[in-house]
Amino acid sequence: MVRPRIVRKWSDLSRAEQLSFASPEERAQFFNSLSKEQLEDLTYDWTFWGRPKQLPPPGDWGTWMLRAGRGFGKTRSGMGGTQQRAMEERRWIALVARTPADARDYMIEGPGGFLDAVRHNVKPSDRPAFEPSKRRLTWPNGSWATIFSDEEPDQLRGFSGDTAWLDEFGKFRNPERCWDMLRFGMRECSKDKPRIIITTTPRPLPVIRMIEAMPSTVTVTGSSYENESNLDPAWFTDVVLQYEGTTLGRQEIYADLLDPEDSGIIKRSWFKLWPANKPLPRFEQVIISLDTAFTERTMDKDSREPDPTACGVYGLFTQDKYRVPGDRSTSRQKYQVMVLDCWDEFLGFPDLIERVRKEMKVAYGEVDAPVVRPLYGSPLVRGQGRRPDLLLIEDKGSGISLRQQMERESVPAYAYNPGRLDKLQRLHLISHVVKAGLVWLVESETQHKKPKTWTEPLLEQLCSFAGEGSIKHDDHVDQFTQAIRVMLDKHLVAVFEEPERDPYAADDRPWARPLIKPAVNPYAA
Image (tube, rainbow, N blue to C red; front, side, top):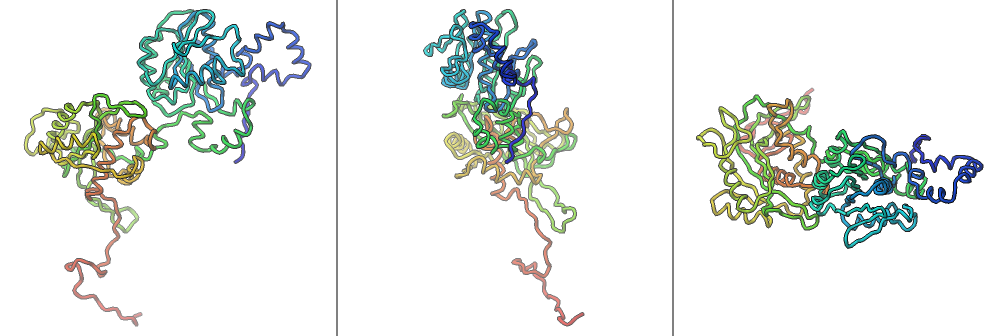
């Protein structure tokens, strides 16, 4: 690959870089004009060594979002801004990282940290003392910082300060929770307003977009190439160039904040929209699909994140067959699918059983007043709609107990076994059904040409999922894929093209065979 040409303006260079372009005589004159104390101060002066993008921006901002590519110097920038705040006056500072080990390894003792042993980023007389057992840094002037981690965001409930630095915010597992808890603690008065520094290589997290959209946020972006003079040239040749032009390269090199749905398997445009003013069709089958997690706060063993129970309700209805324009073949479809309801909640086992009982009593598709998201407890009149025909539950630990309980109550529960396929493979297997336009969403009455708002969690997960770990929760992905997969397996939904039949071709149906096949004269003109 051809290495991209990076053009930097004079104003993009640090004062040290600008001085390097001066003549030897001009450089000697500059250094000779400084005293010994001034030269020592210059060694640790971040305003001299840092590029303009690496320095805290001017203005009355509340959050500085430094979103930059790998190797840009983000951590060094965050440390420099935090060190400056710590030495201005006595403050309590929050240092927030993915884990306490990340805070120690990168923010404190790493190459861009406060206590780097090689580069000596901070002047010895201004260096903080690190007390790992207390998770604390203490500066000579009395300022102190406490280490907080994304693993336990509720620890931030006790914080009350005016300065915070969050490093590699994009890899947090609980970014929304950390942000919310931190904001409540940014309440102390000082010479200026409370300020938050965020340094990160981006990931397509909604919370990052939300923070950047805030009026008090100043966003600064940069690429890996902007720090080229301080990095190994072989790294650019052997690593960076291999990702030029790729989606991963846009994110990791140029820090583009990608739309999470760009890498998704399912696209929103594939779903059809049922007009809000059009009565719902008569449903031939209604299926409820559950992805269960019925502890009060079910925790993932690796990420320690809670998982909700997700539910989807799907109605199957018939549509007339149609002829593809410009094609002699006929596309026939047995059923099409409409999303009638979806939700996700943290439910204990007794609450989940009660919720399923109510779901199984709801009727969908009333003749006079079609119901899309019905309320529980409404009286059911014969002929008003169709109740669920099938309760679909994944045949795994959390679903087996629920299915057994439902069977005791004579509820038709069906055990779904996904086999050895992973979540991405399951999504690929059913994606053609959505692509063929067989899945419908109901249009919102208030937002023209948009589906009802309660479908958004389902759409966000389906259209953003690109494999394990690509999204925070994938419970709706599981319940949707298992529902469509069972429909395919039971031949309720099919996408196929059947060519027009030769009336004289062999046919296994005896009643379809012609009685007499006309003779063909081989000598006819």
